Length: 534
Image 1 (cartoon, one colour):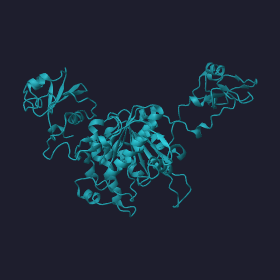
Image 2 (cartoon, helix red, strand yellow):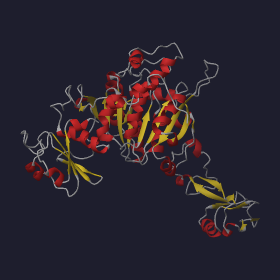
Image 3 (cartoon, helix red, strand yellow):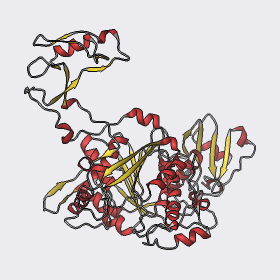
Image 4 (cartoon, one colour):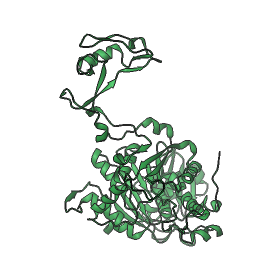
């Protein structure tokens, strides 16, 4: 199988392991609504933010959507990762030029994307997690190869094309009117089995009419024949129309219904023989019965919006002027991603949040179907995070006055705004910072031991049971004893005071003074902080 290589690849393949763990620090004055809404907006470098979020959300995200920089050479490059390699330092310490196609620009983009995609993969649910990437012609080929390497080519689902513009204005030899959305699923078979549909729009609904004033509303005739290859004997029968005309399936065809089912539908008035009652029978399907349509890989602008619509949406929310330098994605586009990929209680992650379209789409979809989906957004730029991302989500949640002076009701919901701690979890000497709380360390211990996000309450030294073993943490006086020989050190009396578990136990503590009793009690001891180099 072809492989992707570039200058500097060796330096970034394991770079995600070198990124230090930082803590999420809530900022109440920038948050909105209840603190337990389950929604987060995190301001900070997304590489560090993803590493900080892993202990809480690893393996729990149903849908990831990202809209990374497109590698055009025109965007300002802010992803100057601290990678310890002369080649990487040479490139990442400089701003991407606007000179057009250059080798180092592609190398730089791949170096930026690789560690972020490796971390993002760890967030997805193994059973049915899905990741979507917006990309354009400048990097779609590189993105596809990169995703094949990190996620596996067998997890590729589709390369969707969406029509971002519909104007005939053309400043190039051939007008650029489309972009792509790459889709990869952790479990492709399960993703395909789900067959999530998207709502039918008015254009598609126009084929549903009501020529006979049916009280059940608009309907359309569905052909009743099918290929005869796997037909059963009861799919070949003669039908007499109201006019007396008789019908049999055409050669090589059969009726799509058994005779018994046909007679039942006919009795219910669900068979249509044409205006004069002498046409080949069709099944009546009502618009009210249509749950949605299976999406195609072609997404036209009238179904999912376009760049003009997206800009107008943002301008309206902010009273007439756009606060965002680049073109946002339309809400309808991200809403379609959500409709295809999620159910009402799922978690959605966007680590290149920009103007906050993903959160807007989540709240809008929840309002439409009564769901309680949650979102996590990460935005690097402090000004954008506070004054665009956060402000937009706050306004659409609580309501706002649009550019025309009209009051737009809120969609409901809220979020907690967080920043990343300035200092990592571990200090320069490798010790746990003194201000780290039990609850904060519990997340990292659980993640180090299980590789999954921590969902416990962190009010007991017993964090939980995973795959048949109990996981304990002794730290910061969880047993109300901060003495050296007390609650943070595993001793006989401390062990006796722990919540009981009849089975193997893993205990994280500053030291172990139980001696041979450790093995007799089925304990695997792990010393903090040294066992937490995750």
